[in-house]
Image (cartoon, rainbow, N blue to C red; front, side):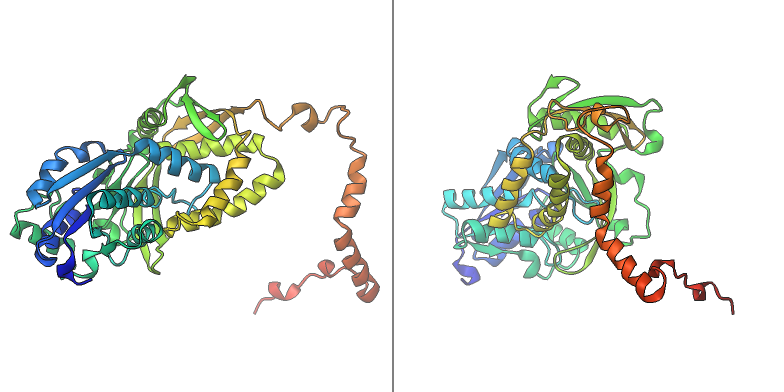
Length: 421
C-alpha cells in the first residue's frame, strides 16, 4: 500500500513529544489522511489532562480515551506476577505487558472507525515496535502499520522539538527536560538524558513516584496484604478493588523509597539499554506473593514454576503475549495459584521490604513436622535409608576410585595452585 492510499489511521497517542509530532507528520506524508488518536488510560493520572485538546490542536480529528486500568491489572499484571516473571533479574515488565493491551484496543478502534492503518511512536531501536506490531499481526494482520521513526528524517528528540515548533504542535518536553518516560499504574520508566551513560547516577529530580531512602520516614511501617488464589484483594484487612489497591500501595511504598531499579537490559533487537524504573506497589506485591507461595506451594511445583518464570518473562518482554505458549503457561500458573490464599505482613523501611509474617489456611508448613521434638509423621531413623539411596551414585564413584587409585579423586589436593614463582 503506497503512502497516498491511506485514508484513515488510528494513532497510539500519549501526548508526549513523539506522538504529538506524528499527527501532523502523518497528514503531511500520507495524503492528508484523517488521523484519529487513541489513548489507553492505564493510570497516567495528570498526563491525561488536556489530552483531547492537545490532540485536536495537533491535527487529529478526534481522540478516544478508554479507562483500561482494571483490565490491565486483572488480565496482564496479576497473571505475570503470579507467574513470578522477572526479566533479567530485576525488570518487572511494566512497559512490556502494557503494550499488548494498548495494541488490542488500538485494533478495536481501527475496526470501529473503518481505518486502513494504525500508527505508533516507537523507535526503530526499541522493543515496543515489536510488541505493538506482533499484537496487530495476532489480532488483525490486514491493518497496515505505520512506524514514522523508521521512515522520517527526524533522528533525535531535538529534531522532533524543531518539527513540533514548525507545525505549532504543543509539547511539554524541552531541551532541558529530555527524559523519555512511560507511565502506568504499575510503574514509571525513565530513559535518555543523563541515563544514556550508565556511569551517571540518576538525578534525584528525575524520580516522581518514590522518595530517596534519605528522605523516607525514620520510623518503619507495617502493612498486611491479603491474597485470594494469587490475586491481591486487601490492604490491612480492608478489601479493595484492584485499582484502589494499587493506588494505595503505590503511595505507601513510594513514601518508603521502595520500588526503584536501575537496569542495563538486553533489548530484543540486540543492543543494551539503560533505564530506571519506579515500581512501588508492584515491588511490594511481588515480594508478598513470593512469601505466600513459600508456604502454600510444594517443593516440586515451586521449583518447576521458578524455571518457567524465566520463559514467561522472556516471552512477555519479547512481545509474544498473544501466543499459545503464553496461554499454556497461564494454564499451569492458574492451577498453582488455587491455594495461594492468605495474608503477608511486610515491614517497610527506607527502601527495604522485610517479611514480618505470612499465614494461610492452606499452608504446608507445620511446626510439629519441622521441629526436633517427638512426632508420629516423621521417623528420624528413616533418614538413614534415604541418605544411602540419595548418595548411591557418589558412593559408587568413590569406591571405583579407591579400587583403582587408592583414594577418592576428591581427596587429591592440587598443590600446583599454591606454588609460588
